[in-house]
Amino acid sequence: MGYDAPYKGLKVVDLSQGVAGPYTGMLMAQYGADVIKVEPHEGDWGRRISRSYEGHSAYSVPANLGKRSIAVDMKMQDGKDIVYRLLQEADLFIEGFRPGVAARLGVSYEAVSEINPDILYLSISGFGQDGPMRDRPAMDPVLQAFTGLMSVNKGPTGVPQRFGVIVCDMATALYAFQAVAVSLYARRDAREGRYIQANLMQAAGCFQSIRMLLNYMEGGKMVPGRVPSAIFPTRDGWVLILVFKEDEFPAFCGIIGKPDLANDPRFADNASRIANEADLMPLLNEACGKIDSETLCAGLAEARIMHEKVNEFADFLKHPQVEATGVISWLDHPGMGRIPMPNVPGLQVLADGAPLALAPGIGQHTREILSAHGYAGSEIAAFADRGVIAG
Image 1 (cartoon, rainbow, N blue to C red):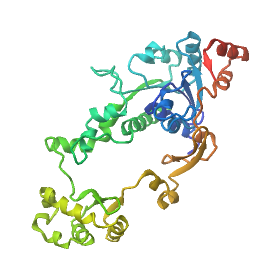
Image 2: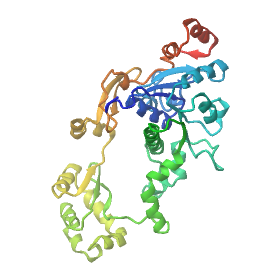
Image 3: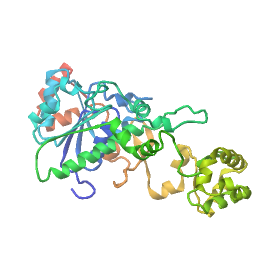
Image 4: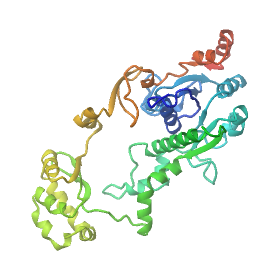
């Protein structure tokens, strides 16, 4: 127990695949829980998103650090029985199937709670457990489109763009982990089970609540809060600049060699700049485009105007601020080589080679887990011979 591992002693059976459910389970593991990842023989499909590196991927490793893996064929009764035994003393069960699939596999909330009435049951889906879209397959980009997220990410052509990171999946994992955490806290006083559901649609709506409300209050228009607030071209790249206070605009104009703009009545204050944004922005873009990024950033920093160079990931990883604050741990991982892994806020730094810094191979711990749950060696061997287990 303690702050470093408050969930030590808790047992999690994680049947989810992809990112949202597995990342929730990963957070449980990082906080000390014993998380058993139950996979089909071919492994979680998250291992095969994008390029595969000896059974791992850039999606699967961050979502499964610190877990143990057991590969079981749940289409066979013996496979189901193995999972049922794992569930007998579990504190949390995680599934991320489309509505109805868990029931077909024999692990609905009703079935699981009959085995273990005290268990917390987390169900993660794309569009939720009810409604006309409940059965639709859904990955992160689908929810970016559906919830309006892409509508506020338009390029110069006005075409909606997908965000290049899986924001809906990650947000769902964080909201789901939060729900599990408070449920575990409440269960101290009343040891009874609870059904918890989270979905990508709901999570995407929550983290867009401010932008969604702004859009609604303006009748569907996206009115900027501050002008200028944009990404500006420079001679050698791009710089984000946010002029937040009124007295910062004259300073900004001086830095880019356009002091006359500060005296133009069209741009006298933020409200005027919003009204005349179409006139102002081309002038600012042209001026910034004649300055290199380092010089522009130096001037903005001296004036204490919010800004930052638009970095590539490689720039971010080697930045002195990142190194000084321990944001990234560099880990040697099987199949992947040396990889950068962000450290989760509030947790200890990942230590290279430690169990919490490694994602399991498919079925890597199958025999170990079965043995710990009372299966004899002869039973385990028989399961392997008949294809009930792998690993």
